[in-house]
Length: 127
Image 1 (cartoon, rainbow, N blue to C red):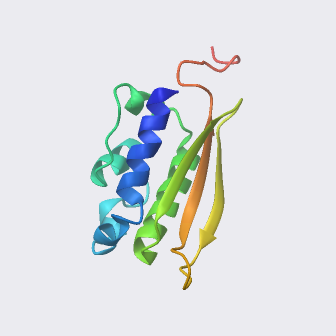
Image 2: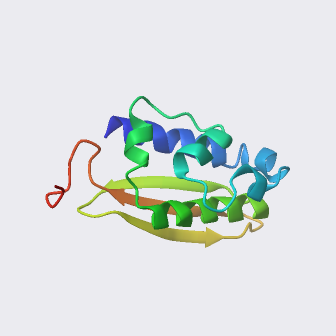
């Protein structure tokens, strides 16, 4: 779990309000083109992976990796910060919990909640 927390913190720093503007100046589809797996996309965006995290991230199903990539690319294009959160669960899941535009009172953003098993917890049906 500590590696997952470190990973989400690194992603939140790279894609948060303090840095999304720098990424917005670049072409999101060049940085992370369609089909880019999360580990490669995270490296392209300067997201630091804690030890062992790459193997864990690679276990996220490809369809969910693409959904996360698409949300990030869209956020970069729109200059909206992204906040990632993680929770343990039985199966993998991705929930796009918020997509808010800037207002006079606050900065907008997108929140992505990712659900996975604990990193060392194999699925009971795994062979």
